[in-house]
Amino acid sequence: MVILSNLLATHQFEGKSKLDIKADKILLLSQPNSEEMMPNNLQLYHKMKQQLGQWLPLERSTRIRNMALFLTGLYLSGKPQLSKIVRTWPLRGKLPSLTNRLWRFLNNPKLEVRSWYAPLAEEIVKRLPTGGVTLVVDSTKVGFYHRFVDWGNLQKTHSAIGLVGAPG
Image 1: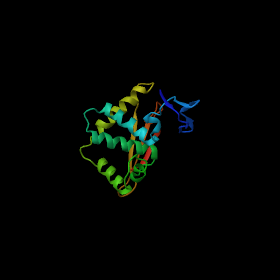
Image 2: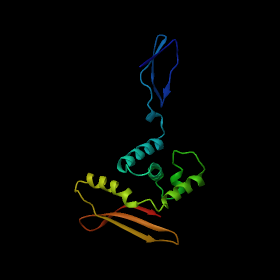
Image 3: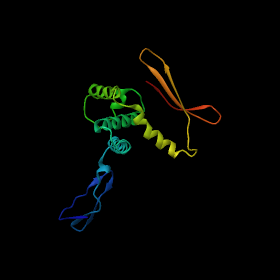
Image 4: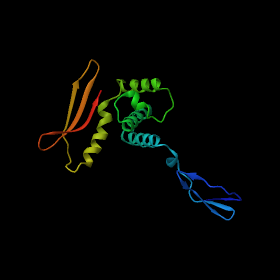
């Protein structure tokens, strides 16, 4: 706790007063931590980066950073288009520049898809009550440079329940 004397001011943060005024002294009850001050996209990015760092400790930090940005943008935008994804990034930069950065990252031949998806898939399977899952993936060509990718979970009745559908 920090006591500030002979000061009559209030500090407002997200509509909550962090100061309690008593006589001519101000008692600071709690200082806002760094997570409270961060926007949601930055908080999500940091959590994503930390988790990827734990799952892939030997991976290059630049790849972890770019994958965390990609996943954050994909989650927050809800759109598969690169330009929509980068608009939610907690970075400064022009839209074409950020879009090119993401495009180069996703087209990197040294990015091994299995090593990135394996930890995530293992965590999902661990948390399932049945202990196993059968995924069905369909990639249908819908244009010259476009494919529609659909994922589904195969149930006991052998009918697929769609999880994700995204043009790609």
